[in-house]
Length: 235
Length: 296
Ligand SMILES: Nc1ncnc2c1ncn2[C@@H]1O[C@H](COP(=O)(O)OP(=O)(O)O)[C@@H](O)[C@H]1O
Ligand SMILES: [Mg+2]
Image 1 (cartoon, helix red, strand yellow):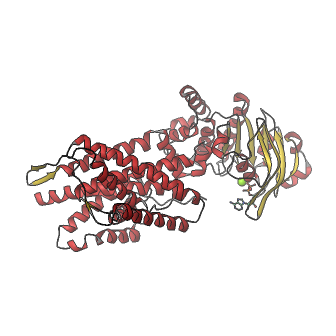
Image 2 (image 1 turned 180 degrees about the vertical axis):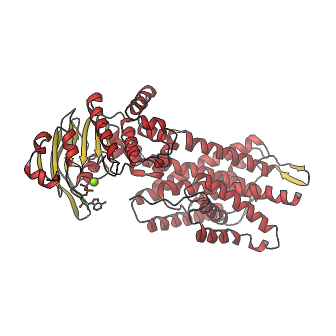
Image 3 (image 1 turned 60 degrees about the vertical axis):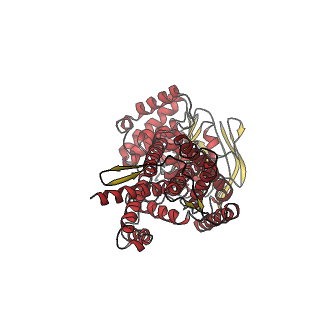
């Protein structure tokens, strides 16, 4: 579905990604794990077109999207839920969802997607008229995911959905992520620092370290890998 | 009492014009975080389009006046969008100072190009709308004042509907809150920014025509003073805040009118700047603005 070849990205003179390659099959949950500053966010931002790579190629559904403008990439049903959620704080929950459906023209499909978002995150339904900035961190993350679902994506990229969220909401959100993948058939690329959690819900994993992929494989196997355990899984 | 009401009416109709101009400053600031100093000259061009169009329609008719208003608004919307496209777009990621200097450059360009084409001497603005005075109690209400108030109220309601009820309006608010997140929703920020310039410039054109109706001597530098005052109005209301710009305009127009009718009338232009200094000292976010932490 998505394939990345020799992707290099830098911020000015600072190199953030040095030639990473990986690919993602339709229908799976793939995770990209790694410590702070490893280049995970940079990877997602480059795929969604917010950053331009120095070299390399990004293919989505068999087409080259490397040079496509970010707003045109969303139109190809690839949606990015950014780090820190980036909800529109002074818009209502409802308006945030409408912004998610910005490119959708079919009112029936929009209504159906909205119902689906409310069915997985009933809290959002209770707060439709509330300003999004007044939601708790966990609710904002639900809104960010819900907003992305409104764009009717085939492929969803989530950047650290567990960041800064109350532990009891983290498990709810991860359950829903799995549900979205299984019930809606949406392929997911999940970026996490919480490697335990990410390896639990995903099938494939890539480990990123200072801009390079240093390990990859089935999540099941990586979970028991002694080296990975020592570095990322808390011993 | 009737003197007070008279001044209040005069103040509110001047304030409504400041409000129309201030809306353009504040909307552009909302999406681009810079002050478009050329905005006051778009106001001037609006008045001149009105001047030339006014010769093509019979004087003193409502439909003629409205037609002139409409053409000036469309003309200035196109001008504003052209300025954004040619001068500002390539500076999107440039430091603020570069953009400000460019804005001042565009402003001077319009003013002195105006002097080349229109001449520097003031011209008499035609009475494009019917003129009548009504007397209610001791208060004289000029038909031009009524037109100012009616047109401003209608335009502000339309603006409110666009900003809060339409897809592009919601996108405008989204872009001003978080441009990157808006892009991730599939918003083409260039289109939204261009639309914002068009909308703000159309309001400035309306302001220019309404101003010229009440102060019917127009020249290429006529935008400078009202532009500065509208800018202060936008700051007073809270820059980036749309209802704030309307409120700031009304307050400023009213205060200025009362000052000019008092023994301190020589300070009528200074009062705007006194207000600016006071607001910057005590409430820099403006009356309706809030301090927001700039997102990284
Ligand atoms: N806007 C930026 N400007 C300069 N350097 C940046 C910027 N964003 C990230 N970096 C650098 O790029 C590297 C990768 O960052 P990032 O992709 O955010 O990592 P992660 O998401 O894995 O924590 C880091 O060294 C970081 O300091
Ligand atoms: Mg990150």
